[in-house]
Image (tube, rainbow, N blue to C red; front, side, top):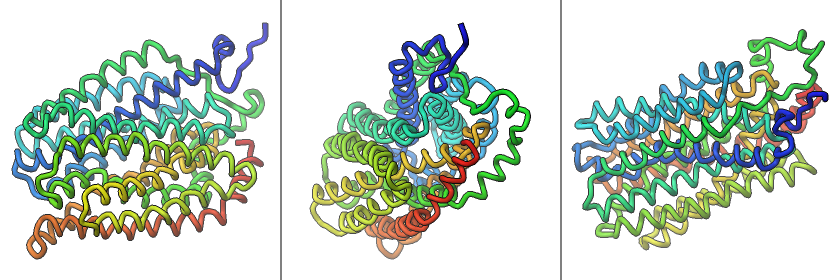
Length: 440
């Protein structure tokens, strides 16, 4: 019998291709959720860590942002290089074990420096999560279904954030319990998930267009990357998602600090549960709809992949500004939920473009470069600069108003994101046609 491939799945798996690939997508999404549980948890526990270790906003900003982002970003490139050559399943399993272990170790930190080292360790581990996962998904799903599949994968973000809020609400017991307990409780299960991944997910066959004569003429990784980095749409989607996520990362890591300060005496457990629900519903729905609508609209108009995020943010950014002005807690939270719903829309389309425009032999590298740009700007900049700005304003405004003003300034990166997505919509049709002409 001839050996065949069905959408990147070996012939032995072809019979169960749909159920199997959906299972793999589910497991990878769960891994991504743990990625965001461990990334988000320090922002949720921030008021308790601040009180316990006596930290200021600038120190918290470094912990939430650049300490995590620096090695997370730098390690992503060599790990992606490995993922384009070696077992991606093994890379993800090892990485998940590392970042989960360092999250649990964060609970042992007795001072600022020890916590900083643990955060750097979490960043190193998490670098091995998304590039190989994106590559696997692209081998299991054809390109016309990629935005949808990658949008489902991106649901790991809202669900991970949701679980981080729920775990904090459960283990903090209204603030009477230690933040360290939460770190242990979310870190250890990640190690168990890594074992499940290794035991149940097989390394998929890599999809190739013509594996015979064309292989000999396949461009080198270096020449493929040069070609990739000359594509305007690739840069446009990378910068669009980066400036949008600059705001989202800052909000996700500082919003609990803001509400605790601005609305004294609030029920912290209730607030954490509400934010968990918002992330698991409004944000998750925005992420899923972003991919779904982009794929449907994109069949008729390729500009959809860039126009949709721009339109969504034009609705969401004014809601952010209003949420920081109103005096009613739940009205403010509701407006923040509207921002989360709209801002989830750019994830699926942006990640799909990173894959669709990339040569097959550098798909993981394309995602790694995408994340390099994204995380230096967004993850490194958003939480860190917000903390630094807030701390600089504390002497003149006090802690509450200083943080409010620092969060209002996020309107600027969101506006840049909208402008970049609109610009990209003018380039995307030509770049897509060139990718198809090159057989990608």
